[in-house]
Image 1 (cartoon, rainbow, N blue to C red):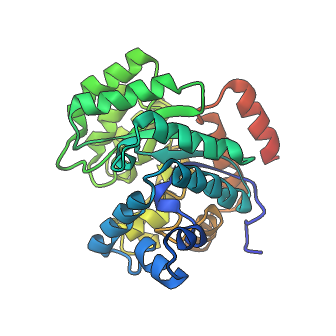
Image 2 (cartoon, rainbow, N blue to C red):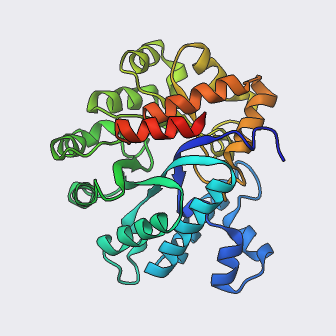
Image 3 (cartoon, rainbow, N blue to C red):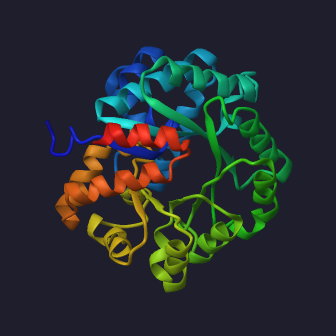
Length: 318
């Protein structure tokens, strides 16, 4: 057993399409594990072209209700095998409609898969920066429809440089009016200003947010508004944001008092688990079991759960 494997954990940032089970995909495609691995798992860190391929190919596999249900149920089982007791799984419904599925069918299939497992988990629906307002608005409406049926919130993903966060003020004002909570992928390829915009919109958490380290004001704002960063160390290395683990600002962010929760992002693409992330953080920065326990409790505190559910998950963490 790996160090920290038996520690109970929470993962608030895990993408379904980036976390497909290799054996499951091998059965679907009738390809051997080696072939499947080359298509789903990044072979060399910082290889941007292959990184994009590893993000694109899984979506082509998830175009039927059966596959979506199967993938969600399997991911929940894989998370449980890593002693995860609560997870928030992300999905872009629009990416799974090329063979005729409706948004409703996509969401219902994934929720069915989650419910078929014994893991406590909720779904976050992703909007994209390169889509028109009305297209993203449909995702907010979809989240509102399923908000008390397994969907927890909406998210915004995509290129921060080409599509600045400030352009989405109207979209998140609409989400707020609908009573739909939201998180944003910001401060990853963008700047601290993107994080500031997300805070001003009313984001509950920040996906990645590593550029916060470049701005004292942004870090202070995160602390004042009690908004944690969802840190995905391996993912940030794989996408080429940092050359090596020691370059990552996670320790400096924690030392500055910014709330940090550790997440996986894309388990299969990055060949990682929360156990692996914890081991890297322990080896490189000296994080201890006490700090991981504190981070998990912080994750529960900021999860999209009722107070009763939070109490139940905290009890499981003990």
